[in-house]
Image (cartoon, rainbow, N blue to C red; front, side):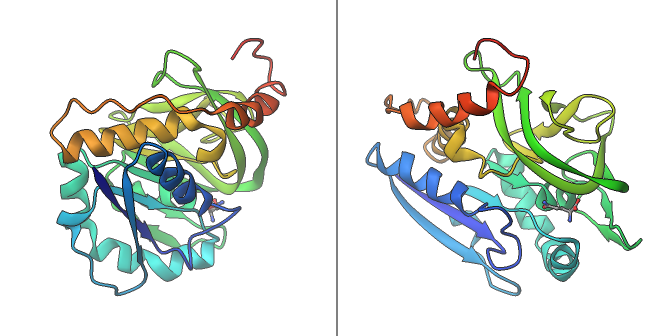
Length: 246
Ligand code: GLN
């Protein structure tokens, strides 16, 4: 089996080591003998979307989001078509904001988003910075996802949105309603940098499984793979929250 990952805007959207998510996907795929090809997609680069099995886009400063969002909007149709077919996408922070309806930046600029996720993001008066622990319905065990947030935007879920999780430590979407991230089909938007996947191997494996299931028409079960060090890093952050058992 093999997988092709499209890494969107790696030069502009790559805060707090977000590229580590692509490395983690590659590492855990190769550990199961699955070959991985990563395509870096920069401004104006042509993409053969039919050949893409998994999409990743990292976070960015307001100025970088402003630089790429028009290019991103031009790709809306083919991108949303593959997401609707079940191709997974992981979108971190600034990318998550641009998958929603719009992002109002700190200096009042309104950046239109794809509207794939039913969320809107307004500028906050302070930044949300620090470790995050949330509990997600995606897994039976461990139920937690951990990461690091640093964002000015406050994201609010629309009626057709499903939260990725409930915040146990940190601010998450907006610091008010206890939600973190959003999730639709196999697309996950989240504020969690960290980078996220190296400390959450269960999420890495889920994304790989979704991608392989979509590509090979279901029934793909990943072999178990050791994740002692990854889970040790995970538990260090869980220990900062009030949750007692991972
Ligand atoms: N610029 C956005 C904000 O501050 C996103 C930041 C990020 O990706 N960390 O809300």
